[in-house]
Length: 422
Figure 1 (cartoon, rainbow, N blue to C red):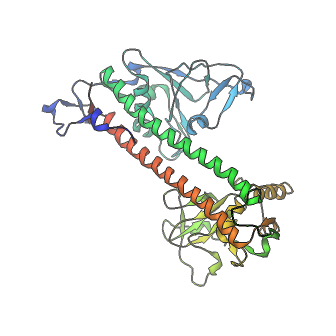
Figure 2 (figure 1 turned 30 degrees about the vertical axis):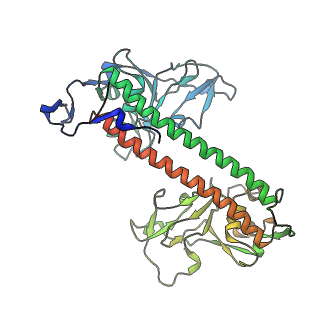
Figure 3 (figure 1 turned 90 degrees about the horizontal axis):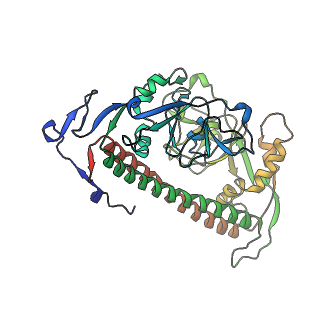
């Protein structure tokens, strides 16, 4: 990242009271020239309003809901009326969420006037001019631990106005707030640029997949005939075992359920349930590194994931595993891209349209038809797409690293453990 943080920040190695720090009400050290205020003293609170009667796809205003904030603005609805306007610089915050949810107290910073309208169970906070920099306040309040303490992990959390306004806020001198906000914003912009690059690469890959997997574009040196096949001729879709949910454990052999199906199934992005090892259970119910899995019922029917854990797992019911029956005719890596292609999704959609519930069987999928190239060309296509996937993966790791660095830096800057030069 092209930021020399050492030029912008000065670390105080000794934060004893005699070295310019004092105690706060919750027994933390803060710089002597910082104040500790209640949110009520430095911001104006406003509740949102119900918009059910004015929601429309043709509305001029973005409706700020908990889903809008939780998805960083990716999922939203529109309103034909601005019943609860947000001004540029306002902070919208989620007041209600399910137990242990990730939206409670998540904030959204308003970047424009006359664009957003505030829904019910969302509040807005306007920083008082001259006291708080709105960007600094946004970073300070976003998922603040004070608010998260109200979540008992059992019932839905509903933050009240008086609870919100009692939140303790650290108030550096305004010029220092501005400097801190600038540093963190620079980090956010770097992350945003990386994320945009990832989306561009994903779109490029999507277009290239369509061309390569249909033969619209041939790889240099390949001119062999493509042949129509029924998937079941080369592939078996193995269904899972009906494990007893009452016997799920906190440790043991991981169970791959429908909820675990993501593009890459790893330890870092999953919450597994476990099972005791079962002697004599067929090897067909085991999942190993590199296996291609698919959800076979529910709202995510057809979602495909690649198992990337080194330890084996068990395959639960309503999850399928693709088993390659003839490696001399079908490359398994090519199969992975084939079942993620638009051709596969189109046939899946047609099958699902015939049933009342979103379910798909092994036999239905094995009847899917495709036109595939000779084995060498399959391998060439999968190698190209795999290289793109690797480049996307590396960018995603960079985003993860920047995000962790930003998180650590924020903890230091927003508490005064690191001071900025002003």
